[in-house]
Length: 239
Figure (cartoon, rainbow, N blue to C red):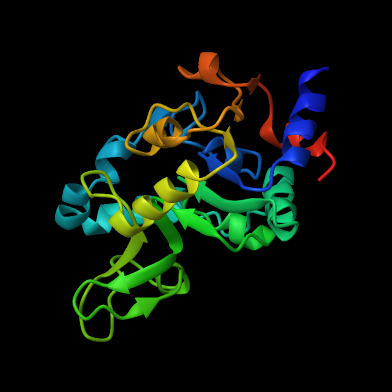
């Protein structure tokens, strides 16, 4: 049996699938990732992107943070690709129980997925650091410089910056989904960023499928490995 046929068979036999995805799921929608050759980390700025996207930099240089953030973190015209759409269909069929994502673009929800655990937050949610009022992404897009709430506080994107902890509730929910999964599909991630990459070690089953263009350190532990486009792999399945 070839790998695609086996992947199809595993999906057909499973009814508690969990998907964990990284930046590679969104690159096929035109959103650059951070670590690839063309990713944000290899572009030149006054400061490295990982410095700009840190809590310390945000607090000390909010003007420069928001200039970078508007330019390089907001891809509001991006559309879901074949992988996003296939996962949404799997959820509608009651096979997929949750999507766990490191991405902040909201494309899984745009594709129709409902149970999406966003480990790193979302560009679509923002809040006032002073009074806590919630704002949509328009508050960032339609402002200049540092966006402020009507109370005077700074509006901060609900995105987990470097030096900031992951949300404990989201993390524990994600862990519970992975531990109860009968099939675990991991896509578009090099599995190098922790603690998120550690979710793979929480999976207790024998149907681990890895889909990533480059090899990962856990390829040897997987039932199936596809070093290919995640959109093309999902497009080849009947879902």
